[in-house]
Length: 245
Image 1 (tube, one colour):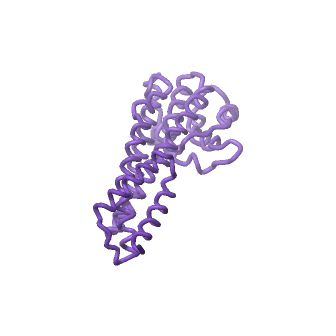
Image 2 (tube, rainbow, N blue to C red; image 1 turned 60 degrees about the vertical axis):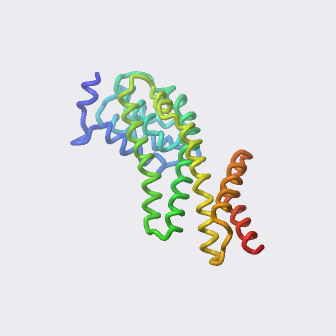
Image 3 (cartoon, rainbow, N blue to C red; image 1 turned 30 degrees about the horizontal axis):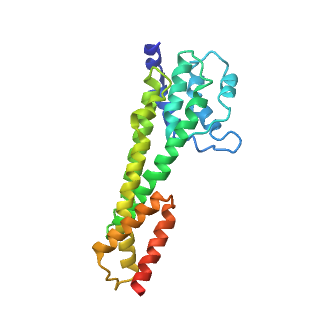
């Protein structure tokens, strides 16, 4: 079965590659009724075209038009797992229910709550240092990991012997998320310091002491669960008051 699966082609493109490319557009048809269901059906269309399933096309699409929602970057391993099971003639009903929720929770925390803020903070820091590479820095820091996870997750899901849930476990993203957030805490004081100096040219407070104080305050804020955006504005206000005082 695996040899048959790997030998099938969509023109010069293997049909799994076509499914992966389509999965990049899973959010394009996002809707409040089915969330990502249209994107799922669109991504799996190559299976219908090349008759890799026994059901009629309408029945197949109807089956995969049910409600579905997960983190878009982690949709790739789920779609790959569904495609593999469909080709092997196995049931796929429970896969989306089992994988969608956990992938969404972990992906939101990692990408929205850690990786994107890290890229933004590093880009701002580079911009404040006078470099024109700030946009490129953000694009690389954010897109290289997310594309790597998408490609790796799809390969794992399609070639894996099980349902692909182990893919998240191998990455240990919750621990990585926490590490990234602490890295942000160390970078933010420099960003706030440079921001204050760029606004107030005569800012002459002791830099080492100031950065140490900001770092301590940020750690305290994180322990208290204060949102990072509020901490940034608050510490900028503190910097302004120190200057005026």
